[in-house]
Image (cartoon, rainbow, N blue to C red; front, side):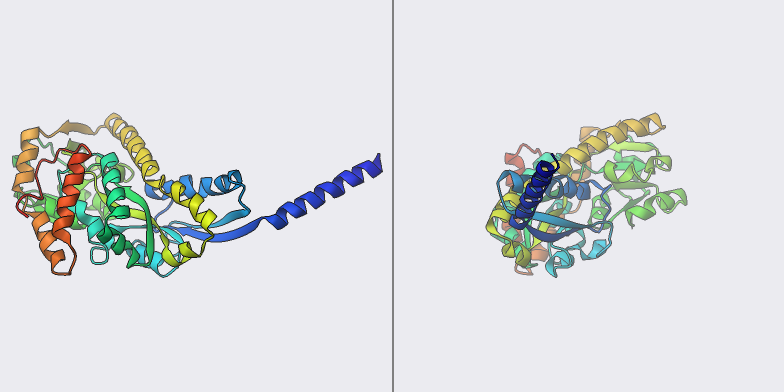
Length: 355
């Protein structure tokens, strides 16, 4: 009996050793400037990290991936996301294009077309299509030594204020906080734009620096903005693409073809996983803050149209600025707006008109 057990143990050890010898480990780093509690980071974990090895095994591949997960700014901060992928600080990573207006102007097109579309699903469809098939978009990624997989999109921007807003007249003379390019959305309202970052919004409202904020619910709810701005007005300024999931081009091309073939379709699932999480959290969050005292109302359609028409021609300015840099921005704007309409969006303002 002991001899039989010894033989079986030896055989099992030999099989395990042979299997190990047949498996080849590829070590890859995946990173982000933000922690995995954030939807666009969690989506990377839920797709390539969670599924890659299972897919490789199912295909009968000898390769397995050992992921070095470095989230939360361990390797780089939010201002250096494209540089981190470009320089190989990380192999796979989330790129925040909203902080790269010079290097990646095309991917920021949504910030210059407010009220064009409020559906995250449509934004993903349009931006994924452009980023993988339009030569100018492809060049924008490849010129930064990156290969694009799929889009990061927000939920639609809404208005959080210290006072109720029933019409645009209620915003006249008020100070609205916003980050970066979204500040231009306040122009034409008679309100004052105050440039600030999300981490400062709560204190700025509490201390009187601002009277309201233009922000996505998925960004406002976690920082409990409703405690200092309890009036939430649904204005649907738009869902915007503000980043993407990408890989260092040199590293990608160095991977075995069968590994790339397995990873690419999984990585392309990233965008819709992000959308799923964003929509799920937005719905739950809006229900929760109302229970906690927030008052939610909807700006009438005619007031939304007035707001859209009162804005300066942001799209025209974006086109002119980028055409001077040799970017085919005029055609890109037309293609983008056409794609939105074909996907089902109904823009309140035709930003491509007259270009």
